[in-house]
Image (cartoon, rainbow, N blue to C red; front, top):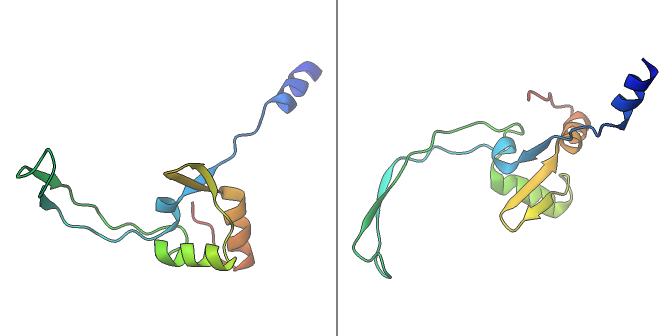
Length: 105
């Protein structure tokens, strides 16, 4: 029993992260056809699929969240790569608690 308890303490806890798509509202985008105007694919067309609207955890736009980050009113993100930015779930929960918001995710 003591050994099992010791092993449980040694295991690292799994930290959760949120991406911008989890936090911000994403507007609906209808499907459309794109026609290449230059380059190797000139004249070819491509269908860009539609995107359903979704409500984020915070309930504001991506632009607003980035503005809050810039002003220091929202937790700083963690840059995992040039295209992947995340926030710690604990930082978001603390921020929401300070703003008296309910955490629904």
